[in-house]
Image (cartoon, rainbow, N blue to C red):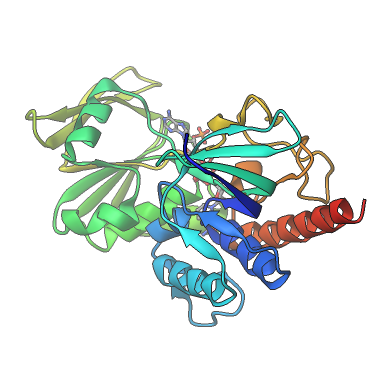
Length: 317
Ligand code: NDP
């Protein structure tokens, strides 16, 4: 049996929530150990320009901000590790966690900052070309570059879809946006931006029937107007999906209270506490409302302060 590692504070996930928790926990002598997760740096690493994080008057790229946050966490001796937690057992007084390389960790306190992941339509053809790397993507900022001078299609009508459509419009010849209802969900300013961009065509009441391809790469999309029933084909080489996210909380579901969409429920509003003593949550794993880097960072701070109070209370009990 491999040796069990004991840690005071285990942070699971490395977005703005996790790094902020790490900075606070490290400065409070909690010797935090962070497992970065499947996507080190989290969702912001797939974002281009972040213009709304206070303190960056001229903006900053998502990846750059995450590099800086990691450096700040390491500066106070956070033990940042590449790898992820595959299983937890929060049933007893000890919080047991297992890593992808088989290590067992017993943590006095745990901060969950696992964030959320992009959603897909679930069509077989979409998944086929996604797995082939043949032209399906949920991140225009990451993959748009490959479609310079091409025609692309993007699905979604929220702020993400608008932001990504606008980003693609700067690279692609034409961007067709598929909106399933007759209106946007996005904020007025974001919707106006895509409406006012010449090479973005918006098709309302339009749903994706099938992603078309030659067996290797995407060649088009078959779409249906859900008002008229008319089916048509749009030629494109890139098919982008921007229809929201799912919280990365599956491994916690047997121990931590989740809402009906999988987001972690706070035990007490205004704190970072979950229903399990000593386990705290920060960022998008518990936030389906705000989902901003700055709110994630704020709740990361709360989680570390709550964990610190929990540990010191335990030490003096
Ligand atoms: P949202 O949940 O806001 O929007 C998802 C969109 O995808 C909706 O328009 C929805 O359509 C559509 N959709 C969902 N499923 C399907 C489907 N199967 N087929 C077609 N369309 C589908 O997610 P976002 O990721 O856009 O935004 C999440 C949060 O992040 C929001 O609060 C947003 O404001 C915020 N955000 C802010 C940004 C900024 O301020 N710079 C940038 C990006 C995000 P329908 O409307 O019909 O339900």
